[in-house]
Image 1 (cartoon, helix red, strand yellow):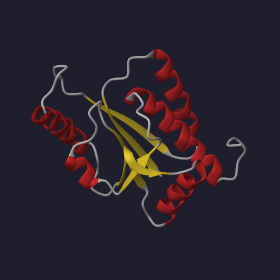
Image 2 (cartoon, rainbow, N blue to C red):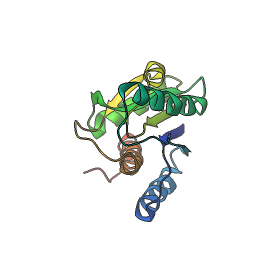
Image 3 (tube, helix red, strand yellow):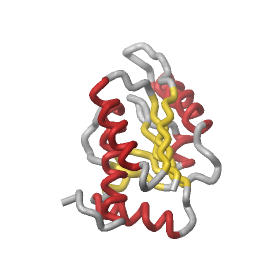
Image 4 (tube, one colour):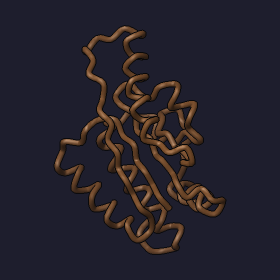
Amino acid sequence: MKITIVSVGKLKEKYLKQGINEYVKRLGSYAKVDIIEVPDEKAPENLSEAQMVEVKQKEGERILSKISQDSYVITLEIEGKKLTSEKLAKKIDELATYGKSKVAFVIGGSLGLSDEVLERSDFGLSFSAMTFPHQLMRLMLVEQVYRAFKIIRNEPYHK
C-alpha cells in the first residue's frame, strides 16, 4: 500500500519531526509512506469571510495538485466520522482488499479545508471534536496509521 500524507504548512518543531520520522520508519515494513508539505497561504490575522475562503482555496489548489487521480482520499475534519483505532485498521484493510492501494490523508491549514478538497474527499475522518495544531496532527496520524497496521497484522502494540 502507498500512503501519502498531504499537509499544509512546514513542520518546524524538531520533536515532532523526530516522532514522525520514527513512525514513518516503523511503517516501512507495511507500506510506502510519503509526507508532502504544501505551503500555507500568508494571511493577516483578522480575515474577512471572503479572505478566509480565498486562503482555503489557494491552499486547496496546492493540496489537490499533490493527490493522484487514483488515490482514495481521507480528509481530516472536525466534522468527520470518529473511528476507534480498530475501525480505522478495518477501513485501511478493506481499502487494500478492494484494490485501493493508494490512500491519501489530507491535513488542512489553520482555517481548514476548501470546498474543492472536501468534494474530492472519499471519507472525512475526525480524531476529536477538539481542535489540534495541524503540525501535531501529522504525528498523531502517522502513529494511528502505524497502530492500524499492527492491528491488521494482529501484532502486539495497540493494547
